[in-house]
Every structure is written in structure tokens, then in C-alpha cells.
Image 1: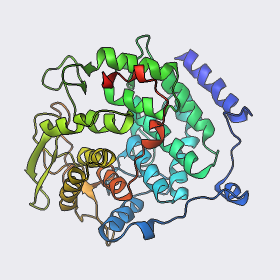
Image 2: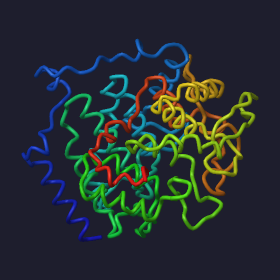
Image 3: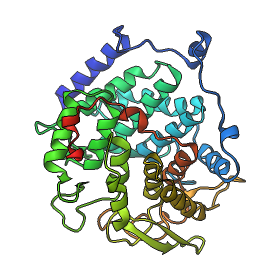
Length: 395
């Protein structure tokens, strides 16, 4: 741990002062505009209408003065993943200052959190930023995805040192077999290799080099069922061998991924009565026990169908998600989607938290908006020159 601390301390100060082409000088948004770089128009009120605008306003409403967003309203729970999604939502409609407010928070935590813990930001914390726990690969990869999208949209280099730190830390988690360790628990022990986090990191680290090649080799050897042609979530567990989000995310992340993986997600499809409005909602569960509709994952599936040009399937899901919208907020004229339609289990046998089906959730609401905006946060990282022979999914 001491060696890691020294490494990241040196790396941080090197990146902060470096003038190499790959690391840019920090500039403000105002300076970017002053030199004539055309930024996309702040257009959320022109792009979003009616219910979708009400959802976006609710998301904006839960942003705190420190830049962070709580995962649900009136909670004290903050998720790195949810905040990365929120930054992407703000970026997608041109509200860059709101995204910067999130990035600034994590920029300010580099010394006290990232460097001090040997790399990575905490997966969860409270609304004041305290009591952080567990450093999760996948969530840090989502923050890097948000930073990459921000730079691509604005040309602003302010957060390049932060992005470089994240990329280097993610690369440091690669094992000899090409897989990536899942991060670190509170006691410092290493988290096992998690397929979802690995493929998200593949997308987050731009370009294609030996790091990416190693990941694809690992997935081919350890996390790909050659008979079903599906990514495997939990190889040792027959009941939870597959996970729904590997269908949607796999399609959104990997070029030329077979459309059949989306059709095969039918194994998770079911209908539940939403506990908060009594409506029947059809969608997708986390796994094959089919005891709940996971609304975030269902919205991910809709976006994957959109990208596959399977409009009927996408539109059918989006109609179900419209039926799942709820108004349970102190914010007037606002809507959101809860995390799930009813009480049940998440991936595996763990029960969802108490209010998962009774209050709007950042993640579900934002993935729904990505559909409305025709915006995939994974498109940028999907642009990789992967050699045909490395695309194991096509064989």
C-alpha cells in the first residue's frame, strides 16, 4: 500500500505539471469559449418536452451544493456510478457547468481520497462526502467515461489529469491473464474479477492496445459461453451464471456484437404489478429468477435495441417505462422512475433496499433520458480499431 501511495503521489504531481501532448493544460470553460471553440448549445428545454423535461428537472433538483447528487430524493446516499451518469446526462444536453460541479468535487478529492487509498474513488459515501467505502472498478470506469465524453464535447482540458489518473489506476488492475481485479474492499482486500466492470473499463480506456487485447483474451477464455454465445457473469454459479446487463452493455460496448444477444435477453423478461401505481409493467429482471422489473436495466435494453435498429422492440420497452414513471417528489412538476417496480432481489439473492420501488432513482431516470435523447454514453469508447481476429464474439 505504501508503494502505491508513493506511486500515485508522484504520478499526480507529474500529470498536473506535464506538458506532453497527451496531457493538456487546465483551462476553464470560459477560456475554451474565448478561443473560439464552438460548444453545443445548452438545449435541454428545446430538446426535452413534457414528461421528459419533468424528469430532467427532478435530476437537476437533487444536485447538492457540493456538486454531488443523492441516488434518490431526501436520502443521504451518494453513488459514484449515479454521479457519473448524472454528469453524462448534463453533458448530453449541454449543461456543462452542472457536470463540472460533479467533476470538481472528485478533483478536490485526489489527494485526500484517490492518492491516500492507492488509487480509485469510493463507490459510496454520504451526501456530505463522508464515510466512503469500497473502491469499485466499474464505478471508477464510469467516471472516466463521463470525463472522456466531456472532453469530446467541449474540448476543455481541465480534467485531463484526473482522467489520466483514473486510466492509469484502471490499467494497474490488470492481471497476467488479461482480466481486471474488481477493486478493493474497506479492509484493503482485492475484489474478484467482475465481468460487468471489466467490459466497462474496456470502454472507458480509449484506443486499442495490449491492455484491451488482454481483456478480450480473458473474456474469450474465461467469460464467454461458446455454445450460447453469451458473456458469463458468474462462472461458478449455475443459477446466476448469466446476468441481464451483460446483454445490453455488451451490445453497447463491443463493435459488431451479435444482435442475438438482445433477443436472448427474453430469459429475464417478466411482468409485475408496480407497487406504487398498480400498473402492470413488462420488462427485465437482473437475473433469471424473474421476481422484479429492474427499470434501470430495462432502459439499458431499450437503448441497445435502438442501437441495433430494432425500433419495435425499443419502442415497446419505452412505452412500458412511461407507464412506470412516478411523481413522488417535493419538486413541483417533476417525475422520475424508481429503481424497480416492486420488492424483490437484485442480481443473486440479495434483497433490494427498502425504498427501491417507492421513490424516483437517478440511474433509472437517466437511462430513460438517454433513450429520449438518442444518446449512448458508451459510443465514444466503442470507437476502437479492434482487429477482426480479436472479435471472439464473431466466431
